[in-house]
Structure formats: C-alpha cells, structure tokens
Image 1 (spheres, rainbow, N blue to C red):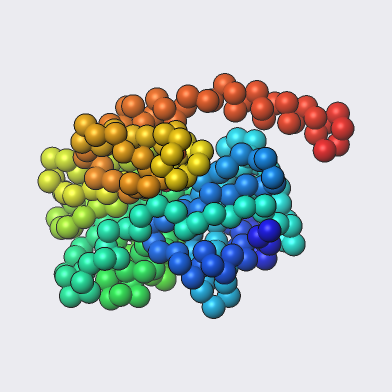
Image 2: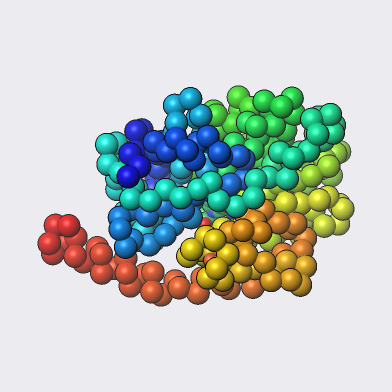
Amino acid sequence: MFKIVEKRKLAENIYEMKVAAERVARAALPGQFVIVRVNEGGERVPLTIADYDVEAGTVTIVTQTIGLSTRKICALEVGDSLADFAGPLGRPSEFVHMPVEELRKMKYLFVAGGVGTAPVYPQVKWLKEHGVECDVIIGAKSSNMLIYIDEMSKVGNVHIATDDGTQGYKGLVTGLMTELVEGEGRKYDECVAIGPMIMMKFITLTTKPWGLKTTVSLNALMVDGTGMCGACRVSVGGKTLFTCVDGPEFDGHQVDFDEAIRRQSMYRNQERTAKENYEHNCKCYGE
Ligand code: NAD
Ligand code: FES
C-alpha cells in the first residue's frame, strides 16, 4: 500500500498528492508516469509524475476529477493509501540523455496547458538544475484554473495565457507562442507541449511552418502499461507505437492527432454511466 502523506487543492477539481513510494522516487526521471489503482480490482489510471523527492521517498501526482476513478483518487485524504503505484513507466524525456555541454546550448520553449502544467514542472526543474533556463507558457481557461505558477516561476521564465484574459495574454497558448516567436523574434531549438490533445495538435500546426522541432506527451488510454494490451496505441509517422513503452513523448509533427483524439473518447459513454451509477449509490447508500 502507498500512503498519501500530503494533499492540497490546486484549483476546482484539481488536487496534488504526495505519495510515499520510495522505490519510484529513486528511479523517476522527467517525462515518466505512474499507473495507480485506488483498490484491488480498481481501474488502472495513468498519471504523470509532477515531482519526486529521493530523500523524502515521495512522488507527487496531480489529478483532475474527470471520470469515476479520478474522482475516487481525489476523494482520498492524508493517511489513506493507494493499492497500487506502479512506475516509473515510459521513457524519460530525450534531453536527460544529452551531454550537458550540448544541452546548455539549447533554447527550449515549454507549453503547458491546464493540468498538463504538472508534468511540465519536473522537466523545467531538471533543466534548471543542469544549467538550462527555459521559457514556459502556461495556459488555462481562466486565472482560477492556473496551477503551479509559483513553483514554475522559480525554475523557468513563465508567460501566462488565459482564454478569457483574466491573467496574462488573452487567448490560446498558440497565440502567445506566435507573439513570442513572430512578434518578439525569440528563437528556440525545441518546443515541448503537454496538455489536452487538441492543444498539442494545434501547437504542432503552429510550429510546423517555423521548422521548430516539437515534442508532445500523449495521455492515451492505458490498461496494462507494459506494451501487451494495445489500448494505448497511436500512429506516429505511419507506424503503430504504444504510448506506454515507446512514449509518452513523441515527435509531434509525426503524430496522427485526429486518430488519437478519436481513440481517447472511445469509452466516454461507459465512463459517464459508471460515474452516474456511483453518484446514485453514494446518494442512496451513503457510500
Ligand atoms: P484546458 O481545456 O483548459 O486547455 C488548456 C489550454 O490549452 C487552454 O488555455 C488553451 O490555451 C489551450 N488550448 C485548448 N484548445 C486549444 C486549441 N484548439 N488550440 C490551441 N490551444 C488550445 O485544459 P484542461 O481542462 O486542464 O485539460 C485537461 C486535459 O488535459 C485532459 O483531457 C487531460 O487528460 C489532459 N492532460 C494531458 C496530459 C498529458 O500528458 N498530455 C497531462 C495531464 C492532463
Ligand atoms: Fe497496454 Fe500500452 S497500456 S499496450
């Protein structure tokens, strides 16, 4: 069992939890994820790693209540435990393998959308620790949905965009990217985008004419997380790859986003029914 040692609310329906998972904390690298289960027989939920502390033996996860399982995770309190906490899974970000001298010449632009800001944080933090200062765009629908602004500002140069203009640039992250690159003439060697699929799709369409290498982190549906079941398959450069073992990061210009978006919404009706049944049982039996 994996005990929750800290919990805080970051925004409406978004919670951060520190989980005691010493072995995962020791092995984790930026870009990787974990698969958690609330209880035996529960659904396996892939979650990106938002931070890890080797000394404390903790791993930080950020969860948004989207479906039934994420709702059950968010309902846990300090002292409660998760039945499973498998990881770290997936390949670490490409830059962790680069020679430091080469890395220090790189100019990175990170684009974090909504809850996708959480997995961007360990990447920018790792780069800062290795002498690389990055520009980071954080986008959200409104100022009250922005997360990790203080944490990210300590490790990167933060630029904020909100859809409704309540904080920072008014509009989508792609608008702010265009302002930085075309308006201010900033030059980058690589863009890393993490957030909703639709955001990552439009970011790749924006960076393509600039010839800017763009890495995306896909949050495909997953079951086993070991490359056996095929649930997380995506088409990249015409090849079928598995997000859990070949990713989660891929060359964004090679990803078939329309297929990935279709596959992601495949079980939406079943998910809605399960959530409604759970809410009904909670009301009737006080579960
Ligand atoms: P959101 O819908 O508020 O979007 C965040 C930002 O994305 C917006 O502010 C906007 O600037 C940008 N965006 C949205 N649509 C766009 C478009 N068509 N073109 C350009 N930019 C666009 O974000 P949210 O509600 O926090 O999203 C949650 C989603 O993020 C969930 O579906 C979740 O699964 C996903 N997510 C992905 C990852 C990952 O690893 N890729 C990690 C965590 C969460
Ligand atoms: Fe089963 Fe990736 S989750 S192959």
